[in-house]
Image (cartoon, rainbow, N blue to C red; front, side):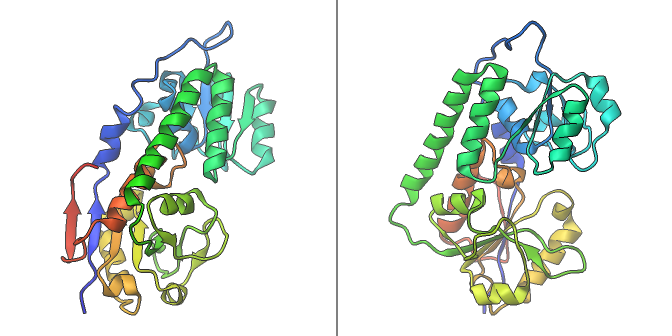
Length: 305
């Protein structure tokens, strides 16, 4: 039986494209007498703002807003669970964009005198509405419309490319927590589920759910033909990568493992429902449909789509 082949796709692509993908969007002056000062507390919103040429207007970000790479230079203010309110006040934002189901976060920011806009981005429809809303709030309605068209065009290009190919069962998962074999996976109805469909695959997880946590026994029952593991941050450290490889290598009754079709992707943008969803669909389609990637124990892929 073949040993599991693990594909590590370097995140350098994200940095390269982030630096040039959206430069065609011309900056405009924000409406109103004072300069727009934006607080972005969600990675997807931060990416959208950069795509609309509003990166220079972001005065504060969440700890998790690390894409595009330029975002790391912006002061971090915590996250929606633990916000540094003193620092937020010192940054003097005029508007805050949040994606959260916690109404108390919105009330807290509004209590500081900051206009706060609550957004949703769990699905592709919600992503499009979020882009529209940000465009209206920032006076970028034209660029927002262009961005939506660009995203839809990229997705359609991937959809056309895989038309007529087989649709294997793919499980999209995160690495297991340290000391556990359970893993979080993409359920039906998430934007990742939608992108798997665009990429020419069937989500191996059959239930409508956001990001359920399942056991290896459940994975065996699902019998995915391909497994894609998204390992970023601390999970991308060499010792963690080795642990992930060993864990999956033990479950040889899973078709994906037996056929050498377990892949580890290290691209941070894969689970950000932002302008890079077209790039994510492209990346997924190439992993799912490119032949021959399961022939070696370890393949380091550095080409560009």
